[in-house]
Image (tube, rainbow over the protein chains, first blue to last red):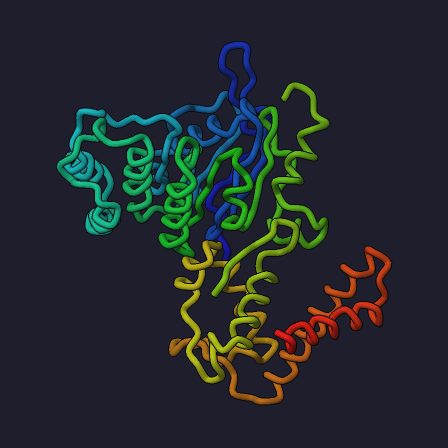
Length: 237
Length: 124
């Protein structure tokens, strides 16, 4: 049976005078890799933070695997923020210790194997690594949890094309039919091959949602082209 | 296998074409084992669901058989292989003809050009 992993109804988030999410409705099934696509300031990061339980919505509802946001859902969600929250002075082995302490679903062996394949020493301090390697380490620890919902906020933002391939490969090879992976990005061309579904989000609302191959079949356009077309005619972006 | 994708057509269809090509070229011989969905998805850098869909479609066409725990193999049915070869070559011819039509060259004229290529080869 297909289960809904993430469901939002009328989700609203206001930061002082700024309306980041404006009554957003969304449902995501399990077993999918979903692209959360939208221009800057469209509400992608806010939606992820609300889902991860880092923020409380101003209005509306959000559920993960049928449950309201709580410590129970936090245990089901693995979140990669757009900014690093790890200390650069920390050794990688300490980072793994922290994850092991916090998350019972953390597969340390898997993380160590992936880091080994990258030739990243567990004794290295995070701050001593290149930006690309720092991003890879963070992705490795986040993907080494056996979560039901992975939220990856701009995972391929600042890295070179080879590192991008590595990151996408990590996402594909860690794929689990029980889990759903949400990737937010505006580098659509780079991720579109790995997406099952896409969600276009703008000004705090879902503009369009669908299956990636269906768009190509029906319109003969890539998601990248569709994105440019849909967002071209909108004001304020 | 040579995995290349364009953005304007469904990925699963492009995967099907690549796999058919691999059978025709002998990279995946009749009766040979087909790698797992996971391995193929990693090789092609595509979503495993999409790879699964392409393999299921090829199974429906009869090109691949099995699919249980023992994995899939390429069919040994000569009829199916012949039909696939025929269809692939026809599609290639159609595509080629369409490209010539853009410049107002008819298939007959194009055939002349193809024959000329043959002569060049024989000379060299």
